[in-house]
Length: 113
Image 1 (cartoon, rainbow, N blue to C red):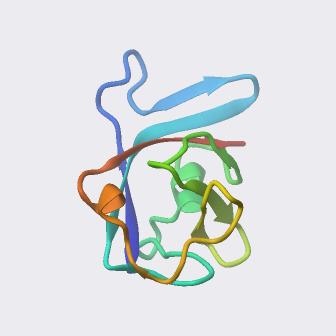
Image 2 (image 1 turned 180 degrees about the horizontal axis):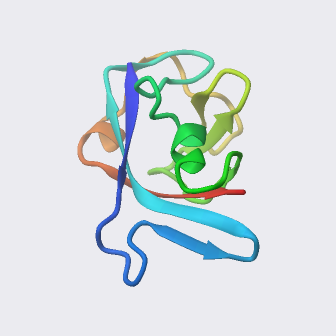
C-alpha cells in the first residue's frame, strides 16, 4: 500500500545526493509494503519523489535509473505515484507485491532536475 525511500549512507563525499550534468541524483533504497494497486503505489504524505527532490533544490523527476528486481519503475508526476512495468511493457498486476520486492529494500537511483 505504500513505498518508502530511504537515503543511502554509503555514497562517498556527499551522502545520498550527487550532482552532475545539470541534474541531481538521489541514491537510496525503496521499501515496499502491502499490495500494488493498478495505476501505481503511493508514498507517505510529503515523502513522494518530487517532494524529496524539492528539499535539495530540484523539483522534477526525470527518470528512475534502476531496474528494481526485474521491474521497471516509472514516476507519474500527475498522480504522484510510482508505477511498475514488467519487462514485457505491461503494468504490474494489482495484488500483493512479489517476494523479490518485499524481501529486502531495493537499491535505486533517481534523477531529477
